[in-house]
Structures are given as C-alpha cells and as structure tokens.
Length: 173
Image (tube, rainbow, N blue to C red; front, side, top):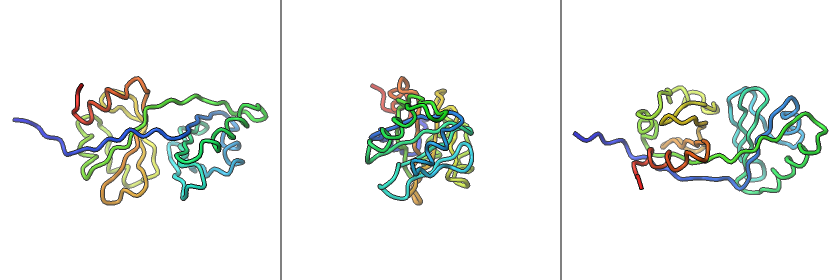
C-alpha cells in the first residue's frame, strides 16, 4: 500500500530585503518609519500595497522581522537608523530559508510532518506560528489572497532549506 499525500506546491521565495530588529525601542523605530505593526505578539501584518514594507512579523513583544519584496532601500534606511544607536534597537541578522507552500490541501499535506492544528490558523489568519515541521524549527504565517487554496509562508534556518524542500515535495536528489 502506498500512501499518497495531497499535492503540495513549494516555491522558494526570498524577499528583496529582510531585517530582524529587537529591543525595547524596536517598535518605536519601525512606527517612526511608517511601518504598520502587529498589535499583539506572534502576529503578522501584510502590506496593503507595494508602497510599503511587504510584511512585518512580531515575534514575542519586542522582536520583529520585516521583509520587502519590492524596494530594498526602505529596509536599508531602517537599518541605518537602528545602527545610529539613538534608540535601544538591535539589528538581528536574518538569512532565513523562505518558501511559500500552496495547494488545495496544503494543511493536509503538512499533517504528517507537523502536529499544529491549522484550523486554528485559518480562524486567526494574522497569527505567526513557531513550531516543528519535519523536526526542524520553523516560523509559519498565512499569505493573503489564498481564499480558495491557502498559501503558507515558511521561514527556517537556511541550513535546512534543501532538507525541507526535499521532505515536503518528496523529491530527493
């Protein structure tokens, strides 16, 4: 008997620019730059247009990851302000493996690899999930616009990128 998983599409997806920022004044620095912040910990805000940062994740109370798919200068300007040291905000280097998982049964496809209840994520689509997927620590968030077929963005340590790609797609080299 062969167990067939529902089809899963995986597209590696590195943003044009990414910045991790943490510290007491990280939120102030980002707000001063005009970035919409998640109101609660472990949440994400997606940009309403290409005129702003693509996404802002709040991990805990004072750690943020911002990504921009369109203009790296916006993040470079924020990094420059953080480096100036006027506020208590520290740059946290981020070089995550990033992928977008999609397919009509994406959550069913992930169930053999992850114990998270994805129905809870659909009920609160701005939630950022930190969990284990195929025994690797990952961060997961729903992408907007996936009403008929959910799109899930995944971040992980870049050293596990190939392993995650091969494990989730079943394509081993």
